Length: 171
Image (tube, rainbow, N blue to C red; front, side, top):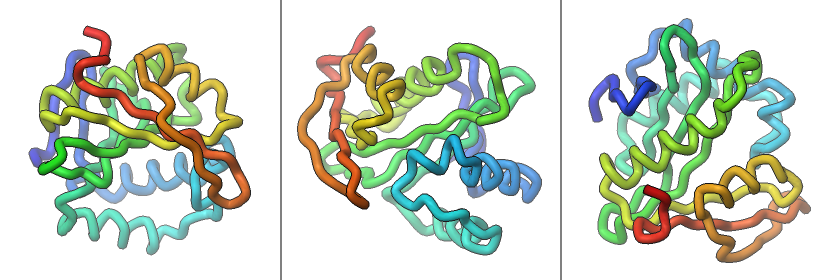
């Protein structure tokens, strides 16, 4: 995968090509309480652990992580994992820069995810898992035609499983 990918008004920068400064910035976002509370692993991640994870991405064919930049601002992170090229499906995650107060970042991130998944990765199905109590995120996904396909419990919290197919997405 290329270092930088342009989609509409945003630039996706692959984690494996980021300089240390941006890697540290992403770690700070990921460890921010407003972001961390929606993650399966809610402990603070160390710099070594973070850098080792990014290094491991170089050898992974089923994971892609991107820093999202709009104009001169880093607005968030999107990631694809469990990418299955045979089934043409993947799971994804996203989170916004917790220090950026611009309205509409969630909309930009989800539209970027959908565009990348269906037009660049050529997927037929996009899946996600979201905490039941994260109503803001669930409502965002519903607005983009993601449908609930199941539930599970992780760390004593209810998780909603959703998916979007290429046929059901908004054009």
